[in-house]
Amino acid sequence: MKIAPEQFTYYGHKGSYSNWQELGKWVYDDLVKTRQTLSPDIIQEMNNLVKGLDSDKEKAKRFTSMFKRKQDT
Image (tube, rainbow, N blue to C red):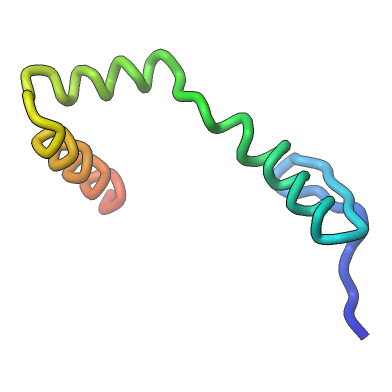
C-alpha cells in the first residue's frame, strides 16, 4: 500500500493531484512557469557584470565565477 496526499501546500503554493500528470502540471504552473523571466534588476546586474567583455566564453567565465562566489557564501 502506498499513501500520498491528494491536497497539499508547498511553501505557500496550494496543490492537489490524483495522478502524475496533474502533479507535473502543478509543478510547472505553480513553481516553474513564473520563474522563466528575469526581473529588470537582475538583467541590469548581469549586463553590468559582463560590460566590456567581448566573447561569450569570457562572459560565461564571469558568470560562473560570480555564481560560485554566491554559492560559497
